[in-house]
Each structure stands twice: as C-alpha cells, then as structure tokens.
Amino acid sequence: MYDGGKIIFGLVLFVGAVTFPAWYSLARGGKAAPPELVLPKNEKQCVESREYIRSRHMELLNEWRDSVVREGNGVYTSRAHGTRHPMKLTGTCLRCHSDRTQFCDRCHGYLAVAPYCWDCHVTPKGKP
Amino acid sequence: MDETRRGFLRAAGFTLLGASCASSLGACARALAGDPDPEALQAKRWAMIVDLPRCLQKEGCRACIDACHRAHNVPALPDPRREVKWLWKEPYEHAFAVEEREAEYGSAALKGKHVLVLCNHCDNPPCVRVCPTGATWKRPDGVVMMDEHRCIGCRYCVVGCPYGSRSFNWQDPRPFVQQVNEEFPTRTRGVVEKCNFCVDRLARGLMPACVEACRQVGPAAIGFGDLGDERSALAGTLRSRFSIRRKPHLGTSPQVFYIV
Image 1 (cartoon, rainbow over the protein chains, first blue to last red):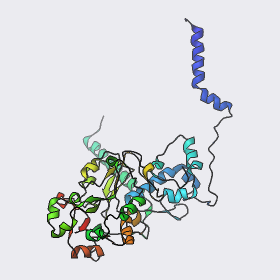
Image 2 (cartoon, rainbow over the protein chains, first blue to last red):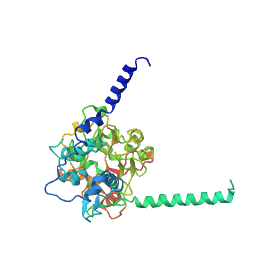
Image 3 (cartoon, helix red, strand yellow):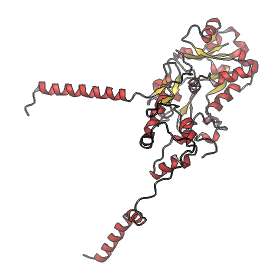
Image 4 (spheres, rainbow over the protein chains, first blue to last red):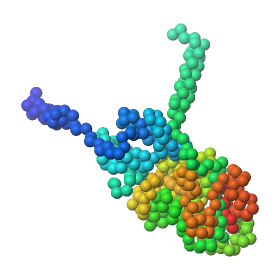
C-alpha cells in the first residue's frame, strides 16, 4: 500500500471528526441537560393529564384548530378532568404559560422542532 | 396456484368490506371533541344589509372599517398593490354595474359617492369552487370561511372572486398591524384573507364589529341577521325596502344587500 501511514492517519482523523459529537457528550457525562421549564405558579392542572399533554399536545392543538375553524365549535371538555375550556392558544394555553420563551420554546429548541403557530398566533403582550 | 376465480373474488370482497369498515370506524374515532359556546349566535343563513342613504348621513365616516380592521388585525400596508382589506369603500360606479344602477330611479343621489363593500358571502361562491385545497368553504349558516392553515397561496380564489373581496399577503403583515388584538391571530406571508362575517364574534354571542361600531356612532346603517328566518328584522327590512346586490347576474347570489 502506497502512503499507508497517511491513509490510516487520515481515516482515523475522519472517524474521529465524524464521531466527535458522541465523544464530546460522553466526555461531558452522558446526556445533554434536559430543558428546564418554568411552570405557572398559580395553576396546577392543565386541560389534560401531564403525560398526555407532554406527548400529544400537538395532536390536541390540531384537533382544536379543526374544531374551531372548520366546525365552529370552540368549547373543549377535558377528557381527564371534565372541565370546560375555550379552544384557544392565546386564551387557554398562553393564559398560564404566559411567556413562551420560558416554556414552549425550551422543549421545541431542545428537540429542534420549529412549529409555525407563532407566525400568526399572537403571544401575550410584552412577550416576543 | 390452485386459486379459483370464486375464491379470489370472495377474498377480494372481504378485503374491500374490511377496508371500508376500518375507514368508517376511523372516521367515527376522529370526530372532534368540541361543543359550541351556548352564547353563540346561530342562524340558518347569515346576511347583511347596508342602508346607503343612512350610511351617507355621515359621509367619510370610517368607524366600521376601523373597528373591523382593529378586531381582525388587518394590516395597513402603504403600497396599494399589496393592500389587505376586509371592509372598505368603493365609488358607487365601481361597486355596481351599469344595469344595477339603472334599475333604480333614486340612484342619482348616490352618484360619485362611496359605498361600503366587503365579501358578499355568496350562496354560490366561485372562490370556493376554485380552491384546490378546501381552504375556503361555505358553512351551513352561509358564511364563506377562510382557513389560512390550509391556504397554499395559489390565489385562484382572488381571481375567482368577482368583487375583489380577497387580499393576498405578499409580505409578513404583522409589522403593519398598528395595535395587535391578542384575541385574533394575524396572518402570515403567502395566504389569502377576507371578511369572515365575524364568525369569531358570533361564536361568542356578539354581533359583527362593523354593525356594532356603526350603531355606536349613530346611523346604524348596517344590519345583520338571519335571512332564513322570516320573522327576523333583516328579512322584514328586505321585504319592505327596495334593495340591490352587487353583480347578481353573475349567478353568485351575493348575501350583502344594499338599500339605495
């Protein structure tokens, strides 16, 4: 093999560079820090259970959107608690989680998802 | 292969049956869990009357337009080619075709005046027929709705509408919304918008913003009500007063009536 040393050195360098993120996070002690969420102070209960909201809030919001826009039905009855809520991002979700940079954006940023809800829907006053 | 024709057809039949059952079950499971607000105003057929002589008592008044545009975050774009409007004024001669104007003797009083125009919420809306995504459709109560979530910005509806009632967002409108109403979303670049007969307000038991604003400033020149209910004030006014509509000869059956 001509220039074997150079080739092997180059390969080692390449593999090292490609796997750098894995090495780096291992060296830093395993997992990346999970997002820290600022929870609302005066409200303890969401419209559904915490697990449901955590994993399926996007489906719930799509359902709300279709119900309000397509069918004109804007009142939601919670499956978990039986309470009734207006199907509104601003009036319901953002009433408690008033600063989306402290809540929504933290997880969305961590998972590198960029929902375009905010292109149109307004976040409460004084907040970006 | 010892498949018989009969065996194949039987299997195919069962497969089809199973598939149709599964899809209809899926449709049932997908029923949306929403109820209307008990306060919501309901009608068989929403319609509007604009009493032009009464409107002209306060010539140059913009109370209804301002209220509408404030309520729905309609941007004030300086470039007329990019203008977004839900409710605006148009010279009488532009709003109505020659034959509509000739049909009425008193129209001389309206010559050169500005009349209020908006989406006519047609019974036979051409915009709905041309929309390729179902982003615009007619509700059972007659309101021609616009779902910006589904709009792909093709602008077929803008071309299809004979009244120019639809505006396209050529740019992000939010910087041009003077005072954002947090209760209503703004729009984004690349979608079409128009008057929605204030369905957001009807759902909360309120009359349209323009109707309310006009009543507050005095003339109460805009009427709104149920055309499907014979006993409604709107149906009564239409029976007793002469009214015209914009371009009815096109077959769109507009539901905004003008008393001239």
